[in-house]
Image (tube, rainbow, N blue to C red):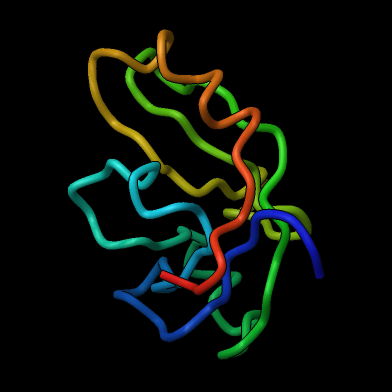
Length: 106
């Protein structure tokens, strides 16, 4: 699998999975641990080690830059991976649309 990805590592609470990602470390600007919320009903559908492609970087709710996680749902909605949260989301989005994977997983 090439491109930007997340790998599911372990359940994190009742609704989310901790993940590792291959974004360059300077582009992960979120105080929360890397995770993907999948919703309670979808927790059992995921397995440790599954890898998914990150697509469609966009701004959510004005302050977050997120990637859609291809093939993963949060309840009935598209799951996302938040990579940036802050007041400069609109000016930073272009960094994510052109991001390339780093050599090692973070």
